[in-house]
Amino acid sequence: MATRDLVMARINLFGVLRSIQELLALDSESRQLVADTNLTVEFIVRGCCRGALTFADGACEFAEGRAEKADIRLFFTSPAHLNRMVEGRANPIPLKGWFRIGFLTGPFTKLTDRLSHFLRPAEGSLDDPEFFGINTKLSTFVAFHAVTEVANWDERGRASAKQIPDGVLQLRVQQGGPSLAIEVAGGRLRTRVGEQAGYRCLMWFRDLETLAEVLKDDTDSFVLFAGGRAGIKGYVPMADKLNSILGLLPGYLN
Image (cartoon, rainbow, N blue to C red; front, side, top):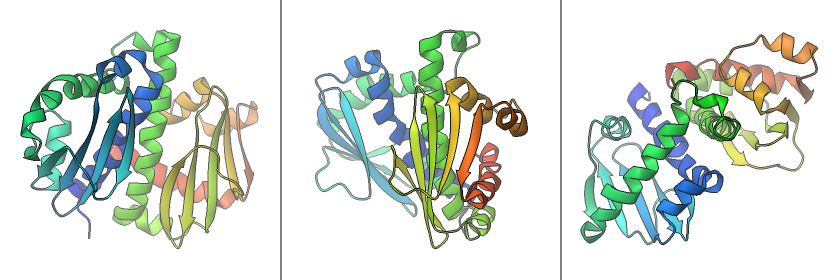
């Protein structure tokens, strides 16, 4: 049985740290921090998971699994160790790339601080339209990657996931993006970025403001559907079962 620390570590690696690639696509100040950076940072979490961020000319790509060629390898003795690092209460153990440690203490730290700046907004910052857009898109990216980790590893999430029929559930924001999809196969979920062909169920939202209300659970879904601000098309039971997993996220994400 997966522990809470293990599920949280998977969310932190495959959701939070993965979202750095989206941050660079959305925020020019973040791109400037790594404009001249070309290297791969691998994260190895004992008893849990591994993944890598590859930086190239102001952009970034995340890949799950072992990196064939990593310039920096960071080791974590346990899932809890990674979680403490994300919280700013621990440091990783460098296995490779000591001569590049300046990237970790400089640009990479500033980059993660910038990520926290958007994901944990200060009071009043969401009043700025540009900030609001970046916050909502990053929050959606993290949340829907977290959904798959909870569905695949949390005991209650796995029980709900087994009841979701196979197929693709597409999430779409009609004005301003983003688009994400969740693939379901044999009770296992996987999140994809962008539009996927042949979806079985579509959850759509009129705009980012509507999506933000859903993420924060600020408005009754019935009000949104009745007002034409959101809707579901296709095989509705897929969305119903997914909602039960979404309800578990507050136990992991604040």
